[in-house]
Amino acid sequence: MTMKFLVLHGPNLNLLGKREPAIYGSQTLADINSALENLSMDLGCELSFFQSNNEGELIDAIQSAVRECNGILINPAAYTHTSIAIRDALSAVGLPAVEIHLSNIHCREMFRHTSMIAPAAIGQISGFGGDSYLLGLRALFNYVKKL
Ligand code: DQA
Image (tube, rainbow, N blue to C red; front, side, top):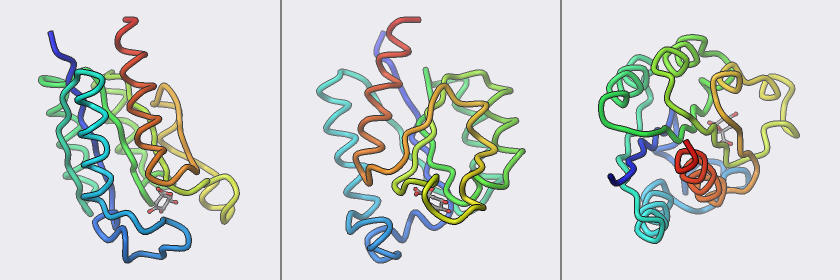
């Protein structure tokens, strides 16, 4: 059966392209999603995409994914550093999740060095701009294929 993955984008990522381009690059969210879509066709998997600025909506999407998806690619954005609720949702559904960041959170402000999400993820990819998502999809796909 075709593998299906949920791609979740957290707050302010709808502004990519205009938002602090020196840190986050010039790609828009639509550009990133379409690069992911192209890669998914090469890999032979299906993707669904969701962006929200709202913590509860991200949690609802994670809970719904358990019925439809084999794994989750998530850039929790600023919720990375604060959201025990998103981490608990990932742990609760038990789907393999890869944590994505465009910027390298470990060489930015101290408050970005801590991820609440990381312990609930199979891995984290941080610092490669839009390529972080593509690397993350490959990693998630290969991980799930071996299950
Ligand atoms: C981010 C890093 C976070 O610290 C920040 O709050 C974001 C984006 C990234 O992709 O680099 O909104 O997750």
